[in-house]
Each structure stands twice: as structure tokens, then as C-alpha cells.
Length: 88
Image (cartoon, rainbow, N blue to C red; front, side, top):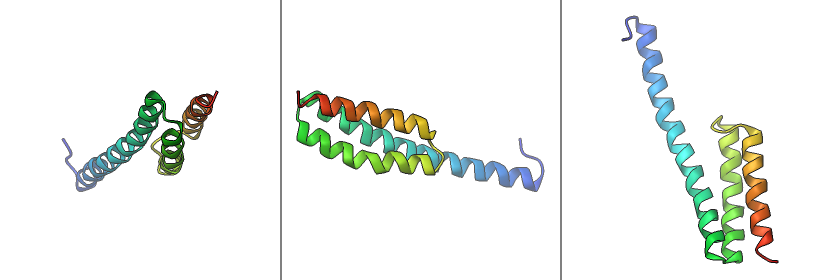
């Protein structure tokens, strides 16, 4: 348990940051899930639209420190490849 004023403040800040980061992570996952669902449904137009909506959200997660840059790039690359392969 926090004893000093500083440790109490840090505990509060940590809790607040945790909830904000959790909400951001959840938001990004929701966008990614929408892309996955569009791919599964077989609708390429919807998948493309969902992918273009997910890209800035995922990169925003990188700038906010939720994801590593390479993780976000890898996810975008794989999703884009799957959307592109739907045309064939």
C-alpha cells in the first residue's frame, strides 16, 4: 500500500493511465475486428473501407505508446495483404 504522498499520487496516476490505455487498446481492437469481420464476410469493398478506417487508429496507438511501431506495421501489412487477396 502507498505510504508517502508521492507514492499515493503515482498510484492514482498509474490507475488513470491504465484505464485510458485500456480504452485506447480496446478501440484499436474494435477497428481490427471490423476488418476481420469484413474479410470473413467476403465483401471486399467493406473490408477496404474498414482497413482505411483502422490504419490511423492503429498508428495513433503507436504514438500513444499502446503498441510498438513494428507490431502495428506488421498487423497493417497482414490485413492489407488479406484484403488485397480477396480480389483474386
